[in-house]
Length: 144
Image (cartoon, rainbow, N blue to C red; front, side, top):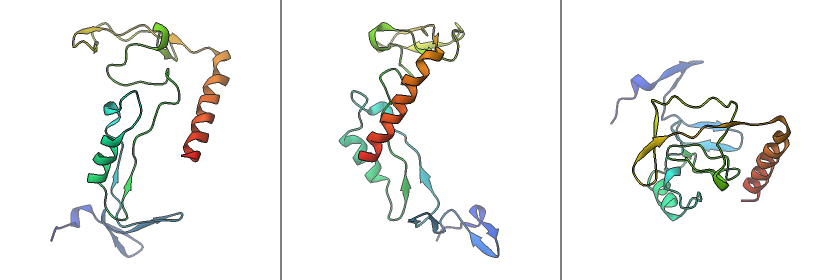
């Protein structure tokens, strides 16, 4: 049997550990360990697939809570390592036009390293479009 004493706290006279049950809203969890999304870069064409289902299935537990993959709200909303090309060759969207330091390099799809592209600042007139992307994403998630 594992010793969970280092993972415990006392709340209102109850000994609570990471492995204690937890209820939030209509959900009853058998423990308090949460797995965060960890495989997004494995998605083909930015869409989670069967490999993701297998990955998370291997890590699931009865009454556990897994936060799985999501998809980007738009083709321009991606932001992880190796992303250097925006649709149509556009500059990445940012809150500033200030580029990353030249000392940082990006790993390109061909395996070489290059400079990060200079971003362009989002304009005030573009905000309604971004809000619409989030709105549509919420609709899609509810529908799914």
